[in-house]
Length: 145
Image (cartoon, rainbow, N blue to C red; front, side, top):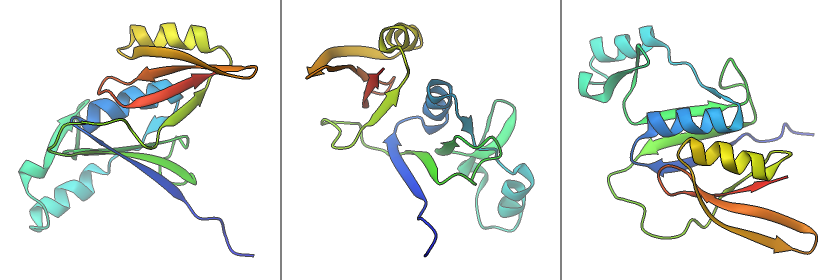
């Protein structure tokens, strides 16, 4: 049997570094660490420019992209979310969204609203209910028990 494939969900956004921080805290995951020495070497060797880098939380990182995963060492998990800056604003409803299972959707809703999420509506199907929310950049996600 072959190994299962790794999934990376890519999220287009306006501020990848900030949104990655927000989602890492929301999911209790980690922002994957950046190898500053590698970034510096790429600039020194002409493979990248200084404009493609920035300092975030005191660390030299690639501008416009950051990934999160449940693995504290980064990159070894079979699930990863990559946030990447794009020039155009979000204009329509997401066709794909994350469902965050929390154990207590109402407590999670309050916590997330305090951190910049917006509540949209509560939906119900049979015995199940969930909160439809927007992250700080307006991306839809659901909070479940």
